[in-house]
Length: 180
Image (cartoon, rainbow, N blue to C red):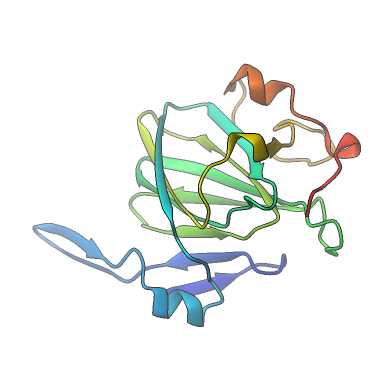
């Protein structure tokens, strides 16, 4: 596995070694030993999957403490633009984001540390998005930021986004009080 680090602390892209031949491909999608050595830690307790069509935007979501989650995300089919926003109030990169294309053909993954709001947009129909989480989902701990907040300056790469009613009314960064 290869690990790529960003200018926002603790964010890591994971690029697995892929073995391919005429039969298809194989790769190691998780190794606790390798992940820990790269700074990706946590007790992974829940896996989730969603399917989205092109132009669907999901997020920006997080779970507040004590139900906070780190995530290891990837796509199993299709492509997605994955976006995470630093919402750690004492972080020098508070309010900044990382946007990374996750591609089923590249098999790349993104580690989303605790203290980040997370979202993505599907760049293809039938995009299957996988989340490995370090805590169980707790509806009472849900939080988020408005996906199209001008202060975040996120280029989602879509002109006519499909967004849930719940995500359309999340707070703007200027009105947000971070629990982290």
